Amino acid sequence: MKSSLSTAPSPASFYKFGGGLSPDAPSYVERQADAQLHEALNRGEFCYLLDSRQMGKTSLRNRIAGRLRGEAWRVVNLDLSAIGTNLTPEQWYRGLLYHVGVQSDLEDELDDHWEAHRGLGPVQRWITALTDVVLKRSLGKVVVFIDEIDAVRTLPFKADELFAAIRELYNRRVDYADLNRLTFCLIGVATPTELIQDVRVTPFNIGTRIVLADFALEDALPLARGFCATLSPDERPAPSFQRLLERAIYWTGGHPYLTQRFCAILAEDTIQHPEHALQDSDVDKLCKEHFLSQRARESDGNFAFVRNRLLSSEEDLAALLDLYRKLLEGGRVSDDETNPLTSILKLSGVARVENGILRVRNRIYEQVFDRTWVETHMPDAEVRRQKAAYRRGALRAAIVAALLVAAFAVLAYSNYRSARQARTAEANANRISRQARAEAYFANIQLAEREYVGSNFGHVADLLEATRGFEDKGIEWDYWHRLMNLQVLTLR
Image (cartoon, rainbow, N blue to C red):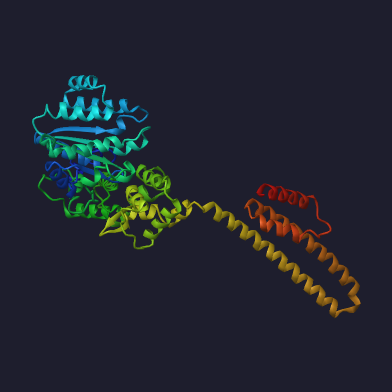
């Protein structure tokens, strides 16, 4: 065992987290989506893969693209994030066609086609370039992968024409059989309704949705090979390595990015300390250090994406966080495709679907984005803090008033019991009474100030009226009285 560990490869050369894996990456985990996407494309179906970040979408694309090339397909990979967004429609579609030409070795032909059809709109020129040049110059099937499709949401123009054109190509297959050799696969972080609003032209209702599930333990066994370099391709990892992987997935829930990264951490520790076999408690400690510490919560890019996707939503933030809090508390939330809040929870990656019910995706997210995090980011958090401060101030004022009342009662009782001290007691009572009225007056003025800041103008008016008869009131009463008169004029 020790010799195996001593020759283990660097985790950095085996695991990769962030960015797509190459088709032959040793840490690639094949899932059901691999077979589904390959079979659907071979049937000529339009496919779309819309999921949260770092779920392995680009890695799946690379894997299937490599496989299709081996089957004599012409494969075009378009990454919309590389095209730019501050462009005119003509510049944008011309940029798409440029990348098609580079990958198809048809740059000159596509340039000539673009220039020869200037009378057509940009999207029509792009589509006809695919059908009249790329498809006709290809003997086999052609697939166009369009990755980072959610980038169309930031374009200065609507991209509905692009989706309408793709749908039209599928509708024309009845009349032009050659179009059956051309298909598309759209990949990104969005819902279909976020990309296109007009259901009459959307291609998503005629396409095949590919769902990326988290890693199951049996499927993820290739990741355990990174703990030892001497395994043959058909040899299962040792039980001790399988146990490490199982404990990692206990925390990550099989999330691709988190699992790859956690395995790299475990492999690094295993290589540095070959004499010490990691136990579950050691794995838990490493998880807390690298994922659950305050520093990790603030610096991890995956956490930042989840956080930003949730907090930057255009939907009702309070309702969204309240729905997520329900998940944390074990409440039942159905996967309603028509509910934008459930879509956001899924696209952020914080939740996944199990048998039609939403669940918090894994134990790491459950602790990073816990109930305290929800309470802190509720839109009314500042209001609640101000109300708490007001309650504390009101409590202090009540205590002072209670003490004053108690003192007055004691003096009154003393006056009743001692006639000889009646005059002295009366004088003391008058002095304390004046002091009590003065303190009550200033307490009311301070409370009026807080209520005014909180826009509770009715209560401010009541407080000023209650102190109107105080004989020693100062300029502060006149100040707030004048402000309230101005406020009334403003409201009228």
